[in-house]
Length: 115
Image (cartoon, rainbow, N blue to C red; front, top):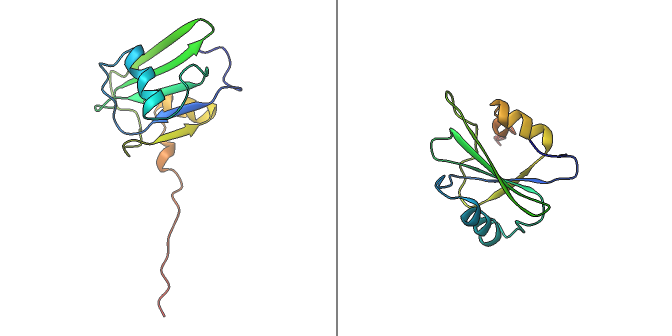
């Protein structure tokens, strides 16, 4: 899929993205909304409202690449908070593509003390 992931940062656009968007619209979204450089060679991931379609945009040497994966069953785990960007690592990318919801794993416990 990608040359090597060890030197590449992976960014998720949280919330839902209009999956009709293609390379030009997604690269503008990366630049204007996420305040990141779409030409950096990093991976930028987007997910649709149904959470069955995932798109990955990245720049490779002399042009943009747009990779798409559609699930026939089930849904991708995806953070729903709108307008944020989240960075993940290559291990988390593998888990995401496998359907493992690491976003909600081991949530912090909060306790209240009564006085």
